[in-house]
Length: 127
Image (cartoon, rainbow, N blue to C red; front, side, top):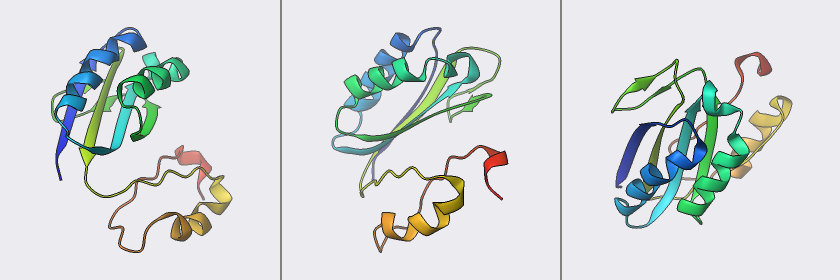
């Protein structure tokens, strides 16, 4: 498995394109991406999704916003920034589900041999 991470300060979603493009050059056949943005960029998730789709076309990608982002390069909190990861190997299956049925949906969404999954949820939504 190969993976490339990035961390960048960017005041606008278009500023992510260069970092996404660079990560894409570092992974031969990517199968999974993750882009995490700080709250200052969080209001622009639709635009961020368009930029990611343009640079990482065909790659299953999780995009999420939070108070801050951390990567192996840097930590960002009170600034407009993003961090992420692009990886190859394995398969990614995205699902979306209301909190009441997340547990019921996981077994059918993941392949039998899956060894990991990511769950992104607001803390107050899960019992």
